[in-house]
Image (cartoon, rainbow, N blue to C red; front, side, top):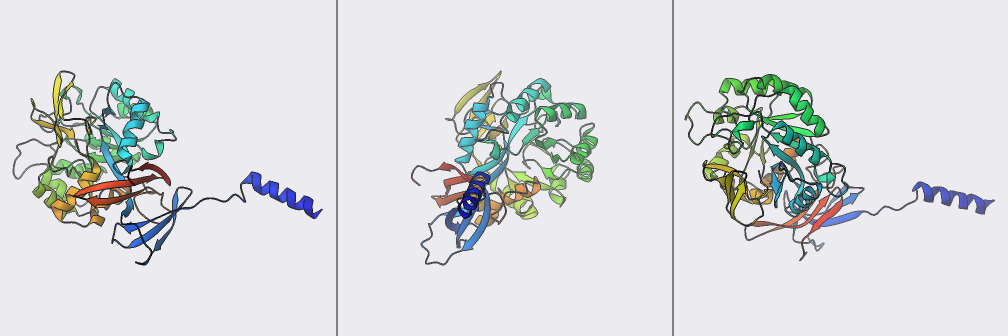
Length: 406
C-alpha cells in the first residue's frame, strides 16, 4: 500500500507541476544608482531578490539598470510605424533592433494622417500585441496628432492637409482598431474642442500630452485642469521665431503639474535649453525620448517621401525645403549619455529619466525599477569612449539581446 501511495503522490506532483523545479536566473554587476556590486535573481520573469555583494566577489565590470522606455518612436531601421508598407515582420525587426540599443519597452508612435491610414496603422500594430517574441516590449501606442496646430512651425513635419480638430467619435474608432492600446495622445490645447477632448481622454485612462501647439498660458492651464499631464518634446513642435514673453514654453515650464519629454540628441535642443529644462523640472518630471524616425539607423542621404525630400544626416533628419526637423537619428541610449554631458547629472538620474520616470508617468507600474516584485526588464552595459555600450538586454526575464563580444 505504501508503494502505491508514493506512486500516486509522485504522479500527482509531476502532472500538476507542484514538484517541478524552476530555474532562477541570477546576474551580477554594478548597480547603476551607486556603482555598488549586486546580484539580481529572476524567477518567472520577475525580480525576486537583490543582494548586495562585497568587493571581493569578483563582480563583472558592467552596470545593471532598468531597461530603457521610449514613449516616442516613429520607426527604426527603415520601418515606419505609420507607413503604408508596415507589416508585422517589420515591427518585429524594429523591436529587435531597438532592444539592441537597450530599449525594453516603447510606444510605437503614429503621427498626423488621414483617418483611413491611421486606422490601418493601428490595425497592423495591434496585431502584434500578442506576439510571443515582441509583444512584451509594446505596452501601447502614442497618437501624435492629428489634433494639433495647423500653423507653420508649430505643426512641424506633420502634413497640414491632415491636421484637424479633435473628434471623440473618430478617436474611439482609432482606439477600437488599436485594441484600446492608445495610451498616450499629443494634442494642441488651443484648437476648438481640445479641452473637452482632453477631459474625455483622461477619464478613459489615456494620458494626454500637449505638443505641436501655440497655446496661451490660459489655454495651457485649462488643459492641465482638464487632465493633461505631459509636454511632448518640449522646445520642439514650435515656431522658429516666437514672442520672448508670450509663448508656449514658459507656462509649461512654470506649471509643476506638467512633466516634460525632451529630445537630448544635441540637435533638437541646444545644450543650454536642456540644462534649463532639467533645472526647472528635475529628473522626476523630465523624461527622455528619442523621437526616432524610420530612417534612424540607415545611411545618411536624401530620401523621398511622396512629393517631399527628407535629408538624413548622421545626427538628425530634416525637411530642407520647409526648414523643419523631421525626427531624430539617435536612439535613447545616446540621449542618456548626452544629458549627463549637458547637465552633469548622475548616471542614476540619466537612466531614471529613460526608465523609472516614464514608467511612473505612463502608469507602467510593473517595470522601470530594479526592485523586488517588478518585472525583470534589465540592461547590462558599459560606458566606453562616451557611449553607452549595451552588452545584454533582458525583457520579462528573458534574454533578448547579447552583444557578440559579450
